Length: 230
Image (cartoon, rainbow, N blue to C red; front, side, top):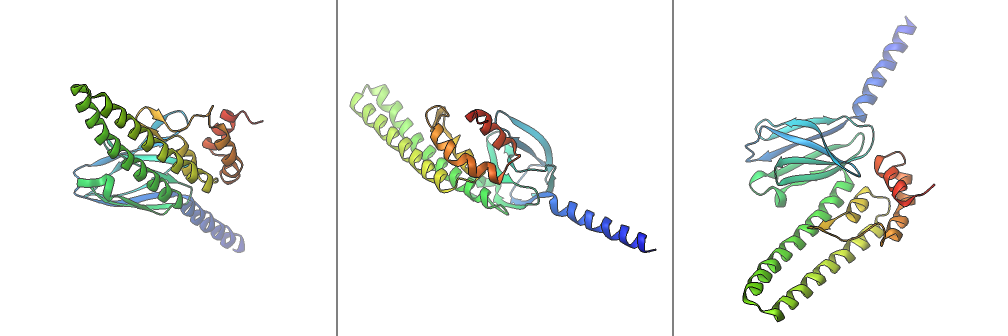
């Protein structure tokens, strides 16, 4: 009888532990006409679709099958993706309005996701400013106004360098964050803010802390390979 009680108790503990280790994402998206979302994971060298998340009246709840930290995307449409970081046991809650999702969305439940959102919104602001410059560039190119073109080129370079400085400070202030590694790989269109060859020292600064926090993650292992650390 005692054996049965002990066995039952252990089974309950194990089941509770499994539930606690599940990564859960849920949320409510207003004015959404979609019936499903695509869950994708960003790996070091590729983006893979891992599952389909069903939407019912804009609401969803889904468990991510993973035993380690991951960087993910929820695809709402061909050009609207929400990125987030989730670790085993996290419970992330999404909210937003589909009519203006990129500016209205919020994700709670993971501190690194908050940092990722902060960086993404900073980059979005740079995009908006460069789009304005691009329109002016085209206009002055058509008019053959070389002086204005040079000024626009200079303004673009200033915006680019300002964001690069922002990212550098962010990475150095958060050396153990996966969000910092994602910040290193940010791009403005086809232009990367950093390169592994020229900015290796920045990655070497964060590597020890990042590997200590996420020792067995695909991201830490990839960084080790890229830096050729034994």
